[in-house]
Length: 130
Image (cartoon, rainbow, N blue to C red):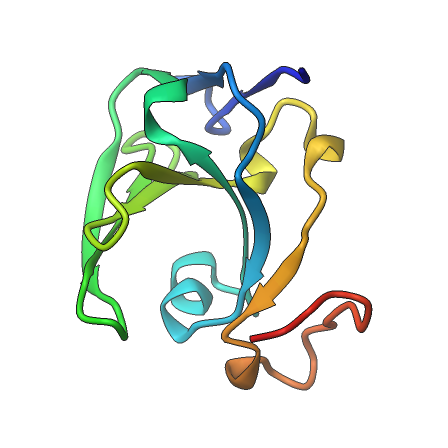
């Protein structure tokens, strides 16, 4: 098993996971675009019980298209997005791929909300889209 650990830019927030990701994706929903300031979020999905977090996260809640609440966690010191969760799937965490200590471990498997993608944001044609 690979070591999935990471944190924010300033190091105040850290996480480690003792499991392999359940999924890895690029999300092009408008909420992810706003949260990242770019065309999409790159996220990997971990079982919540497999992730240990140290440091303080601040959360911003939004209503998702499916009616659930998405909570986006970021470092209150440096502002780095680190992880999030959704009330619709309370057993998982969505972790920002760029927060990994070793970002090469991220291997996207799909693209979601592709219909919201901008023409200037490249989408890998080999990945399934929904």
